[in-house]
Length: 268
Image (cartoon, rainbow, N blue to C red; front, side, top):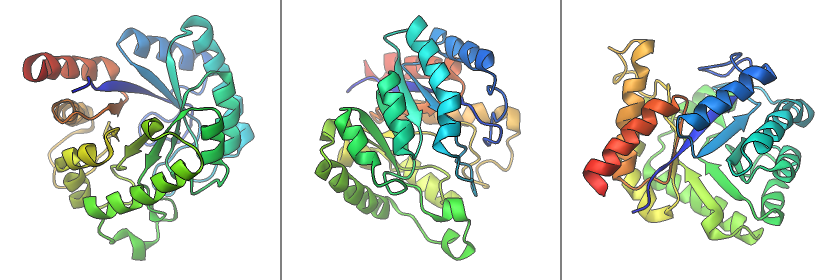
C-alpha cells in the first residue's frame, strides 16, 4: 500500500460553494498556500472556476489572470511543491503547465475542450478525470434522477481513459475521481464512498473529494455547518484504509492528522 496524499484546495473564486471570496486577493491566496504547505499538503490544487451545481463558464483569460501569479509565487518560494490546476480549458492547462504545474484536474474529463488531452500528453503531465454528469451544470431536472452506480461510473471512466490513452497520456498519469456531489443523489454518493475499494482495484489511482460537501441529506440531517469536518475526517480515514491515492480537502491540518493516525495504527 502507498500512503494517501493530501491535495489542498485553493479556490480563487467569488462563488465556490464553501470558501468563495476568501482567497481572491493574491496575498490572501499565497498566505493560504503557505499555511497548507506548512500543515502537510502534498499537492496544491488551484482553481478559478467554480464547479458548484449550475456553475457558469469562466473564460481562459480570467482564469489565467488569477492562477498564474499564484503559481509563480509558489514556484519561487517552494520550487519542489506539486501543483494541480482545476480547469476544463486546454489553454489554461497549457499556460499553467508551462508555468510549473504538473497535474490538470479536469472535472469534464476532457469532454469540454477537445484539445485538453493532447495538451496534457504533450506536457507529460498527470490528469484527474472526474465523473461529472452534464446535469450538474445544466441542472436539468429530468437528468437529476438518473442513478449513478459504481458500475455505470466505471463504464464512463473506461471510455474517457481509452480516449486519454489514444491521445498519448500514459496510464500511470491518469487519476480518476468518482465525483461526489457531481450530479448525484445522496444514496449514489454514499454508494460510491462505500465502494471506493472497487474503484481502487479497477483503476489504481483514485482521488476522492468530500470536503465540506453535504453529500447526503439523511447523513447530514443532524450536522451543523461547523461540524462538517467530522465527516471529512471519517472519510479520509476510510480512504487511507482502502488505499485511495489522493484526498482533496480544504482543512489540511486536521485531515493530515487523521491520515497519519490511520496510517500508523491500521496500515504500517
